Every structure is written in C-alpha cells, then in structure tokens.
Image (cartoon, rainbow, N blue to C red; front, side, top):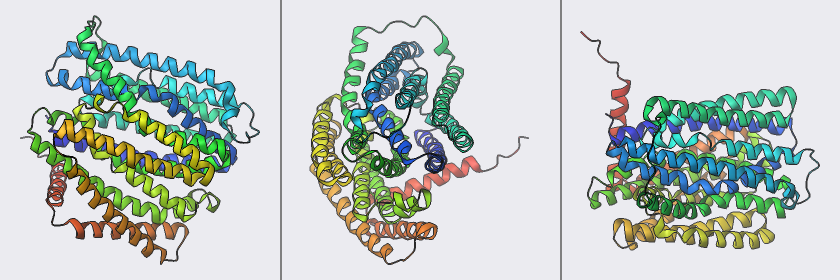
Length: 517
C-alpha cells in the first residue's frame, strides 16, 4: 500500500510529465493555427473558450465537494456509501451538462454584442455551438474520474487525459495543414474530449466494479445537506478565481477588439500553462492533506502549511523571474514578433502570475479542510470588485488595465479573506503570522525578480538564443538568491528533506528488482 507521500509523488510526476508534453503540443497546435488561419480566427477561439469557462462556473463547486465527501467513506471502506454518493454526482453532472448546452444555445444569437468590430467570418454561431457541445459532453462521463482523485490516483486520470489531448493535437494540426478547415478542427476537439472521458469512465469501472452495481440507496436529507451546502459554498468560493481571466478576455474583446484578444489570449495561455504545471504540486497533495487532517495533530498540520507556503514562494519567484525575462523571446519564436507585448505589460502579467500562485498553499488547505462555507461571501465581493475595476481600467489603459484589476482583486480581496478564514477556523491562530511571512516572501520576490530583469536586459540576445540564455540566467539567478536568503530557515531544511525523500522513493521504484529464487 503506497503512503500518502508516495501517492502525492506519483500524482505529481504524472501530472507534471503529462502537463509539459500537453503544453508543448498545445503551443505547437497554436503555432500551426496562426499560420493556417487568420488572426480573427485566433481571436474568436480565445473569446469562445473564455465564454465557455464562464458558462461552466456552475460545476466549480461540485467537483471539489464530491472529492471532499468521498474521503470518509473511502477511509472506512464503505462501498455502499460511495455508490450512493456517485449516484448523486452522476445526476448532478448530467444536469450541469444539459444546462450548459441550453444556455450556450440561447447565447449564440447575441455573439456580436461581445465583439468590438465583429470579424467577417462565416458560420460564427456554428463555431460557438461546437464549443458549447465540447463543454457539455465533458460532463457526461467525467464524474467517475473524481473517484480516482479521491483515492489519490490522480496520476491515472492525468495519463489518460494528457494522452488523449496529445493525440487530438496531432490530428488537429494535420487537419489544419491539409484542409485549413476550422469546423473540422473543432469537431476533432469534441471527439477528443468525449474519448478521454469515456476511457476514464471505463477504467474507473474496471478498478471499482461496484460502480456498475444497481440498487444504490438514496441519501437521506441529513447526508445530502452538508454536500449541498459545500457545493453552494464552493461554487461561490471558486467563481471569482476562475472567472477573472475569462471576464478580462471578454472585456478586451468588447472594448479593444478581436485582434487584441488574440494577442492577449496567447500570453494568458502561456501564463496559465506555467501556472498549471506549478499548481500540480499542490493539487497532487490535496487528498493527502485531507487524509492527514484527520490523523495528525494541528501543530504538524500548520508546519506542513508553512512548508507548502515556502515551496510556493520559491517556485513562483523563480518562474515569475523566468517569465518576465524570456516571455517575449518565446512568443517571438513561437508566433512572431508582431505578437509580443511591451515590457510594462509583461511585468504586469508576471505580477499577476506570482500573486495568483502565492495563494496555492492556502487554497490547498482550505479545500482539504472543507472550509468552503466559511468564506462563501468572498466570490461575491471578488467578482464585483474585479468586474467593476476591470470595466473602468480597460477603458483607460486597455489590456494593462484588465491585468492590473486582476492583480489588485487577487491581492486585496481574495488573499485577505482566504487567509482570515483559514487561520481562524483551520489553524485557530492569528493571521498576523501569515502577514509577516507573506511580507517577507513578497519583498524578496520583488527585489530578486527586479534584479534578475536588470541582469537579463544586459544580455543582447533575441529569438531562440535569447529565450534559452535569458531563461537559464533567470532560473539560476532567482534560485541562487532564494537559497542565499532562506538557507538557514527551518522551512528550507525541511524542503531539503522532502527532496531527499523524493530521491529515495524514485530510487526504489527505478531500481531493478532482484529475480525471485
């Protein structure tokens, strides 16, 4: 039986490996896309993707609430309770898929209202309905993947999902090169999503045969109440965090134009890809933390949080520095110099990436502790502040205004409320400890990244050479500075211990087994 640490490590390795390969394929597909189709197609691709993210916000609370509700019956090996819960979740996901389809179809006649100077592209509504169909069908089988997640076997769903996505990207690139047909490109996307979820469903059925058994009992009102409460709270809790990017994209489309959203969408894709890779560190550990919270003392739990917060500071400082120094080099090689941004916009995007990433540890523990209802009001405040500030600033400063609104909202609203709730109800101690620690991490990141940007600016390289040299210098410089600053802290000592454990586990798994006598 694998330990919590080993399960977390397996989840992380699979998620990282799959995410990196998937990211490479996604960037390759986008590069082919901009060469085979016009920038207007890239703009509507970004807009429709973000609109469907907004349409899917109803699901946000369900997935995490499902996982949280499954922890106890899994720990108790109560298959009857698991069957009953999965029955409820199946109905919920089918209902969400139907709602997304109906609302998406109802929105399709009004697409021109969301685009400044709508492009002369035929069949715009048909393309949008393909995005609607892709999102809707993703709910009809995917709920079973959450059971694997709750069993700390997220690496299985990661391997299946990323494998299907890689195949889909290859087929899409072939379609673009041979036909230049956007509709065929979208139909391939729908087929890939459907195939991925069907395979995950079959795997879950094979691993847990009781899922195919009939006769699951209905949950009582007492059993359903906390689940419904968590779903409602989680939906509100996560709406703003996920909605910030698509809301910004819709505002850019409305007030700046479809060509502007194409460029903005490229950088958001880059930021999100980098953020997803790093976020796997924390997502892979949520189930383990949830299991730990019922078996270990509060002091050790808080120590684990401090370690996770330190890891997030190191990872996001290094990656923010690397992003700032070589993002334009990468985009220039990837898509062309005309898709690059001025330094001030890249600085703002790097800041947004860092501030968002520094919430990873607190979000991991909030999810693992089930503190969703305690901060239900956060999403309302965050969404209102984000929309209002972005609406004002996009008119004054364009894309920079939208990114600035996102930074301010994340830092002043989301982080403040999440930390207050986690420390008061989770750790039951003063949040002043967080303020001191976060202040130290933020100031060190600001100083290190600024110095790193200055150093890289002195290296007069561009293109492929600029990307690799600037990236290598930035990673080495930021990593070295973080080690120098924090090498004597207990968090750094424990971090080294974690790295040692990772080496031990990988060594055991990779070491050839002795033949049986």
